[in-house]
Image (cartoon, rainbow over all chains, first blue to last red; front, top):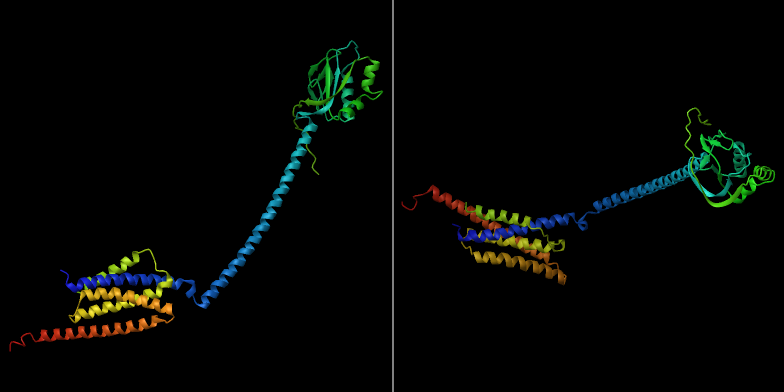
Length: 229
Length: 127
């Protein structure tokens, strides 16, 4: 059984313990508090923070220049990619492997009694169209490009284009500046004039605002090698 | 044996204090330190009272709390009026602590001596 004095003393000592632990904790906080730091520690801390500050500024500067360099690289590559794409598109148009559309002229050679129109006339007409500045030419829906062959068929009025037989009516479409093409073909002493007046073939030339020309099959290059400079 | 239970109480108090999560703001640290001095003084006074058989539990507990609060208030009031009573309180309580400590020491040594004397001469009265 607890003696009388032990009880009071225990309670007192418990309260004393609580107070002491509070004091310990407050003291710890006080020692670490910035106000009570010595001059030397404070100057050392200030110096440290300053050097870190300058380091960080330098790092920001380096990263900014790096970012600028990367950005300019990206924009260079972008313009390069764009230029390449436009080049490829142009080449494809020139090769005739992509469908194209635009304004141009349409030549119709209807069925006629004259026996004078044959494959050579077709070649001449196409020739004159190129000469007049046509960018794409098609005959009866077949695209004319570097690999197209125009040959006579079995009958006189037949023409073989790439091995396909075509007959009247012949429709030649060409994309380019319409009036230029028209004038270019219809020059006096030109093929069209000759065919019209001399051979009495009723050609019809019309300027069209929107023409659609289909593509030719893609050529395969097995023997030809590009010459790199 | 009689001293173990109260000191266990001290340990329990320390543990309880550590488990509290709130801390006194550092501005009030001086008041807390003076309250601790007052508490120490009361405790040592209590121990002296035990050894002199003049112990009064109520005086101990009342003295403990009232002295702590009063001394903290005194120091605060001193800051208010501009007189630094902090050092006064430290001085006074310091003196009292050492006085109580000295009397306690004497009491323990005297009791020890008397015990030794009665042990070595058990039948002194009977002759």
